[in-house]
Length: 211
Image: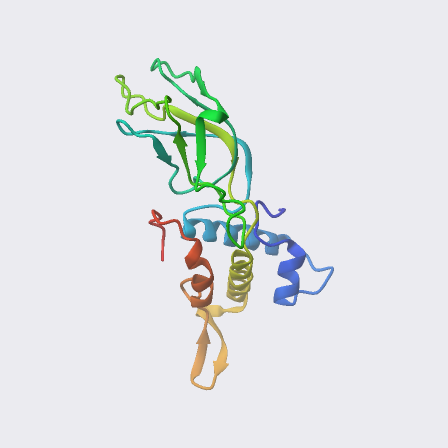
């Protein structure tokens, strides 16, 4: 099976773990995919891009700023609309001139390109409240490319560490990979500390994923 939205290519992972060229990489591809999803769950966000995707949000009374929350990183928005008739259709489109993506200049302001994490409507524009009278939720619909502009290098390095760790499991009966100066050396049952250190700055503030 091919790598699906992975944070390493097959050749990058092969090089890191020392797998010889020409080897069957089907298992390795599965490991890369599963490790990438492990990173997503830990961070509460994904770093691959999902294009032309719709996401739905609710607003509080008098709310002008919408925070997207976990798994709500936005690279570009192509359409913002809302349901103002409580009928499940999104008949009101907010023009790009009537909203601002936040934080301003996210993709260019820092040493790495970051996503937008919220939206603010400008003067004279309002968002629908939620829930609607019927109880319908998700009245604001945003269509765009979600994820990160590029996979951060720290995320790629954490993926390398995790791929190597997972591959140890195949040669680790009862969790033991060999003997060291102080006895049996075992694979770690939790995410390695170095991977956590690399990923910590990228965890979504609202994420409640595993530690």
